[in-house]
View (tube, rainbow, N blue to C red):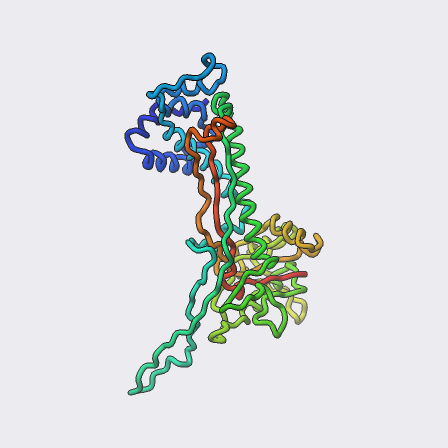
Length: 389
C-alpha cells in the first residue's frame, strides 16, 4: 500500500485542527505530492478513528456473537475520517471534472452570483461628439440611460457516492475512487454540453433590455450580422472574411465599431489540422493578380487560441445537422467577452453524518454528495462569429 503514516495524520489533525489539516492535504493533492490513489479507506479509518482497528473489525457481521453491544464510551469520533476521506474523494472528482477534454468550460467567463437568474446592469456608450468644450463654455453633463441583460435561471446538478461497510472492510478504495472519477466526468460533461449549446447557437438565451434575441444573425435587416455561409475554413482568406464581418458590427448605442479583438477559433475535428496550419504557419502566401507571382508575409493570426471540440461536433450532429455540414462549422471571436457561466457555487462535496438511517438499512457508512449550480449565458453576441460551408 502507500507510505502514508495514518497515525501521524491523526496527530496532525488533532494538533492543527480540521481546517488547517484539510488545507495542507488539499495543497498536497493539488501539487501532486499526494494522489487520491495513495490512500486506503480502511487504513484511514484505522488511523483516524479512536480505536479504529476495533471499529473496522466491527464492520464485519461475523465479529462477535449475536447483538453488538455499544457502551457509552464507544461514541467514537469519526469526524476526522469523514473529513479526510471526503477531501481525498473530492480531489478525485475535481481531477476528472477539470480534464482537458472540456475546453469550452474554460473559455467562457465564470461570474459568481447568489441569484437564480440575474439582471446585469451596464451603461450605454458615450458618443465622442459631445466631448468638445469651446472656450468659456461649461462642460457638458453626462446622463446615464439604462442598459442591461438578463441571464437565465440557474440549475443544480449533482450525484451521490455511497461508501459501504464492505468498501471499508474489504478496502475497495479503488472502486470508490473510480465512482468519484465518473461523477466528476458526468458533471463536467453536463456543464460542457450546456455551454456548447449556447456557444454554438443551438439554444438562445440573450435577453437585452427586456427583449430576447438569437445569438447569431445573417440578414441585412437583423440587429447585427455575425454569420457567414460559404466560408468553410480552407485557408487564411476565410479568417480574413470573418474578421472583417466582425469589424463591421456596430455598438447599438454609439453606432461605433465594437472595440474587441477576436482571439479564439473553435473548429470541428475535421478542420483541426487545416486550422493549425492557417493560424500557426510562419508565413502566409498569396498569388498576386499580375503575373501570378506569389507574395509571402508574416502570419498575423498566430495570436489566436485554437479550440477543437469533438463534443461541439457531436452537439451539432445531434441537433439535426448532417455530419458533412456539421464538420464545416467554425466560430471566431472573444468567447470570454461573448459568453459567461453564471455560477451559484462551483463543484462542491459534502458528506452525510455518521449513524444515519442508511447505515442501518443499507450498510452505508457515509455518503458523499457532489454538486454544482449555474447556467451558461450570452453576455454580448456581437463579440463572436459563426461560419459555415
